Each structure stands twice: as C-alpha cells, then as structure tokens.
Amino acid sequence: MRFQEIIHSFIGAFGENLFWYAAFAFPFFIVFWWLGKQYFKKIRIQTVERANNHHFKHDFAFSVSSMLIFSVMDICFLFLESKGYTKIYFGLADYGWGWIIASFFIALVVDDTFFYWSHRLMHHPRFYRFFHKVHHESTDPSPLTAYAFHPSEAVVEAMANFILPFLLPINFWVIIAWQIYSMFNNVIGHLGYEIYPKYWVTTPILQFKTTSTHHNMHHQLFNGNYALYFTWWDKWMGTEFKDYKTRHQQIFEREENPTTTTNTGAVNVKATVFGTTHSFTANADQTLLESALAQGVPLPYSCQKGRCGMCKMKCTEGKVHLKSHRALTDAELDEGYILTCQSLPQTPEIALQN
Image (spheres, helix red, strand yellow):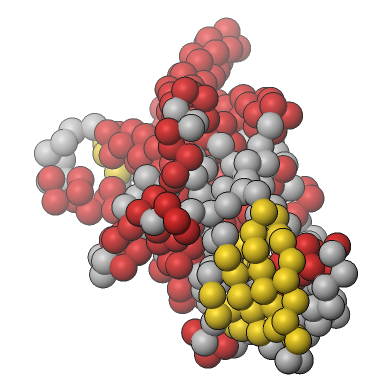
C-alpha cells in the first residue's frame, strides 16, 4: 500500500468507526440522559446522579481517541488480510450456515473470556493507572463512556477482534455482526438505566447474560463484575457482587412500589445500639455511618472501609445498597446483616440493631 492509500484508508476507517460510535451512543444518551431523563428516572440504576458535563466531555474526547486507535489497528489488519495471512472468507456457503452461527457464538465466548481476564488484570495496582484509570473517571457511566479508554487500553480492548480471524475461519459478515453486537452491548452496559426486565436475573438461561446493572455496579463499586457479555467468569471466579441480583430487582421494586421508592432526600433511621435506640436522618448519597456520625449518633465502627466488620448491624426494616461486603459471610448477608460504613439507604424508613 502506498502512503496516500494508507492515509485515505485511515480517514475512511476513522470516519466509519466514529459514525458507528455516534450512531449507538448519541441516540441512547439523548433519549435517556436528556429528553427522557425524568420519564426514565424510575429505572435509573444509581438514584443519585453523579455524572456532569466534565464527565461527558472527558468520555467523548477519549472515545474519539479510541476510534483513532481502532482505525490504526484496522489499517494494519487490512494490510495483513490483503497479504492472505487471515482466515477470513466471504462466501456464505463456504463452510455452511451451521459454522456461520457457531463461529459467531465462539467469537462472543472468546471475546468475553479475553475481556474478563484482561479487564481484571488492568485493575491490578501495577497496571491500573497506565491502562484503566481513564475509563473509571466515570463512576456514574453514560453511553458516552462506552469507549472512553486510555490509548493503551484501547489497544487491549481491540485485540480479540484483531487476533481471532488469524486463528479460525470466520466469515466477513460474522465479524461485522460481532462488532455491531459488541458496540450495542457496550453502550447498554454503560447506559445508566436498566432496560433488562426484572425476571432476567432469575431466569435459568437469561441470567447468564449481563444486564446494565451488572456493569454499572462495576463502575460504582470498582472491584467485581468484570465480565463483558456473560456472567460465567464472575460466577466461577467469585468476583460477581453478591447483591447483584437484589440490586437489579430493587430497581423494579421502586417502580412497582412507589411507597418504597428510593429517596434522594432525608431517610428516617432507627438504630438500636447495645439496647439504646437512636433516631437520625440519612441522605441517599451518604452511607448510614457517615450520616450517623455527622449527627453524633454512636454507631459502632473502626476502619470505615468495609474490611473490619466492626460496623456490622442487622437491617430489620427497609433496604440498603452495600457498596462492599467483604467483611460479611454469605450466611450473615442472608440474615440481613449490613456494614453501615458501606450502606447507602434505598428506602424512606430503615431500622437497624446490633
């Protein structure tokens, strides 16, 4: 390829990548984050909105950067494909329709596996700031966040798409379908609103497909829910947040039960500590412990990081969202125990006892 051809191809690839990013991210952003913001509030995953114009500009700028990186990789791929190094084929009947369907799902499984392990590795303290820190600027993600990667992470994110066609025969249109589905899934994962129905996480087959809540919790709580398409790896490796299903279903309980709708203002809390009952108000954007200490209520605590378990109390009325529960056993979670230093109130009335 001559230099002018390379430049022309790069401009075309960049324009195409930018078009598809805008075609998916912009409509969802406009509908859910702008025009329908109040209407869709009932299915918002994080009830307290933390994203602002700074995050939107940041995410869009780095998404454009990612499209540039993807375009460079596209040109490299096309050059190698022109030399016959890939196993891409174009005839739909060459390997049969059975392989067309099977190869699409194989691509998703391989992509999901690569994403889980590379994503988890990028959370390692040695690599985090060099790869993944940019993406986690948004703790309350929007569709614009979908491809907000540091250039180094953008290369990693594209590797499964880049390498797989060298390893197994794959039809050109399967690659296109895979890329379109991946972009749709990525935008939905960062939507900030739950469009998967309440029954999704309890249905035997459907529960293995990630929901919007699944990835949103990763942005909010950081360590956990690393998967892309499926929940398998998180379940097998013990990295799925234990309250993921509860969190997903609570969104629809807010809609079905307006009397227990998550309150973004004051929440009434009664806490019985060593036989003495204290009453205080809490805010939805503060943990119960933060609100209690600000009002001089002596809830037990120590590290305030969810590690020691000193702030453990039993929630006997109402619901909370646990940002972390590493100090609690599964049995304690089932019995209703919470960590007040990690608990955001989800209902207008909450009762606690130690």
